[in-house]
Length: 124
Image (tube, rainbow, N blue to C red):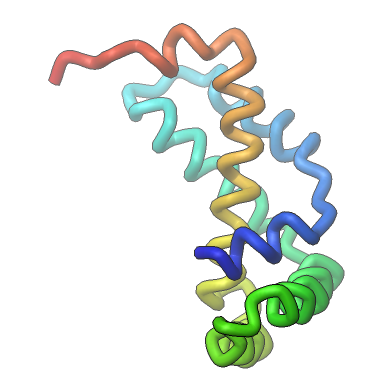
């Protein structure tokens, strides 16, 4: 997780379109728990706009993370090989996607009109 977090901190990704899509989709009625639904929506939207540029940013950032975490150097090299071989299906890409999704979800739900619903305790 430290590798994906280190990469995420080093990439630039505009979450505004993801937040807009999330706000629109969460306005639709659903019985699904809002946090799970929001994460799924945001992650799906990020996967849809995954690009070569974002993958290149991940690859470059991975080099920086490697330098920072010399103790984890073997794991970083493995992550780079898997990213190159698997693209957005690589574990690193999945970690980055879900962290970006969380950022968008938190911005929309945690600070917005949906905060009351999000923190409501459900009786199961």
